[in-house]
Amino acid sequence: MRNSRPLFPVLLVVISTLAPPRSEGQPNGVTLVGHADIPHGSSSSGFKYSSCWGWVSPDGREYALIGAYNGVSIIDLNGDSLREIQFIPGPPSIWHEMKTWGNYAYCVSEGGMGVQIVDLSGLPDTALLVKNFIYVSATPPDSGKSNTRSHTVTVADGYLYCNGSVTWGPAGTVIFSLLADPVTPAFAGTYEPLYIHDSYVRNDTLFGAAIYNGGGLFIADVHDKANPVQITKITYAGSGTHNAWRSMNGKYVFTTDEIGTTQHNMKVWDISNLPLWDSVTVYSASPIDIVHNVHVRGNYIYVAHYTAGMRVVDAHDPRNPVEVGYYDTYPGASGGYAGAWGVYPYFPSGKWIASDIQTGLYVCRFDGLKPRVRPRLLFPLDSAVSAPTKQFRWTSAADQTEDPHYYRVHVKGPVLDTVFRTIDTVFQAPNIDPYGSGGSFRWHVSVCDEFTEVSSVDTFHFFVTPSAVVTPPTVPRSFSLGQNYPNPFNPRTKIEFTLAEMGGVNLTVYDLLGKPVRVLLNGERLPAGKQEVVFDASNLATGTYFYRLVTSRFTETKKLILSR
Image 1 (cartoon, rainbow, N blue to C red):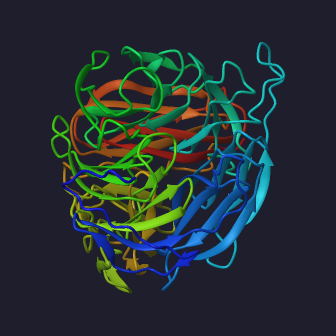
Image 2: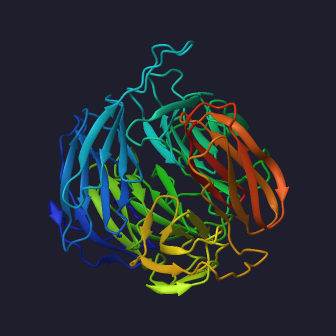
Image 3: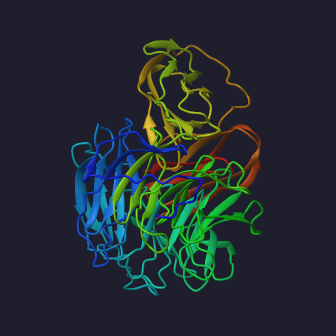
């Protein structure tokens, strides 16, 4: 925009079609390191690009996905210059949105083709369009409805949420499970209070932005995907709620208004005592520029601010958000629907990206976001001989306060194959050889957040002696969910988990469609320590099921197989 505030001098950058990374910054903590303008078509109004997202391979390589008018472009961010690896053709549209889960990207558009599922596992060489997934309901009263057109898409905990599906009136959110097969989504349910423009989901709580007719923000419990339950609704005069994102501590939600008679800014809401809520404050770079999308990483909010470009807001105190940096992607006048459409701040390297409707992809760094380091394994060492209960240690990836993350410790042996979750770099595991058989084990660590998972540099092997016995600590420092044993099973199996603190626990078994088939724990308060539950599946059919443990601080899902 031309009329940036006097606090921040404007830097006008002359950009080539595919600019190499560089250190070109504005004196506010944000530095441009790369830019790519590779259009694939344009609308009559000059819209060339739409949303953006990112994907990180297990070995830490980073890629940007950006919506173009005729599809989705995949950009390699790892070399000395930005490089388009693949273009996935799609329907002509000014709206292309995408999210990732595992090795796949899920792309939707107002132009049709349903959900385009793209296999990213071949990067950096190539990416493959697996299929255009269209689900047509054959079940009354939804017979004939489909997900052919969706405005946005959300992926959380193995579920795909198609928002604004206008071919599924009233165009709320259509939910599919990816747990059994990520390339064949299974219909799980819908949430349709009104038209839902976009959604954000964390720990089975959905925040739905109802942009039209003053709909506000719906907050719903989607633990049972077939029967979502509204928790509350945030309403305010003249609302045009476009998107929403929850703070890391879960006590606040940040919303944006793209239309409506309200100010088109970011609003902060206190949701620490749901179903009650309270308006706290607002943020905007200027009264003229429209806030489009916000995303939270750690204690900072990353803002796609249309004609005000990319913005970073310090939210250490959410009641007093302070802008701490920006990069102006749009050289035109302030106001209107041009400039920065989307942002993605979740790359472990500390890079963050934005998509500008007219000028393409921008890659930046922000001084407040330090790179994560891939963990290195410290103990047990490779080829070590050990007792069956082990302490695992590895190097830290980042500062937990400024860049919240967690670790997944994967231990696999002759009987055990399980994953432990912790925020520490030291983990005292329960007995990893409960049957005393000994043998060869291997382990590695992944550093994770909501959207990325990067493995440790190494995978180590160690050997357990059958006779050694070590008593585990009575109170673990971390949460974990073990693999059921036996698995496959018939008809009973044991599910073990550990709690780092006393609290309410939910443990539910689901079928392949995401429908609950057995509630094993329903909010029971259990003490810290090791717990176990026996699941009896006598009345269930042979097949694959999933069990999910949910506490206020931990969510984990695993697969189990009933074989008669």
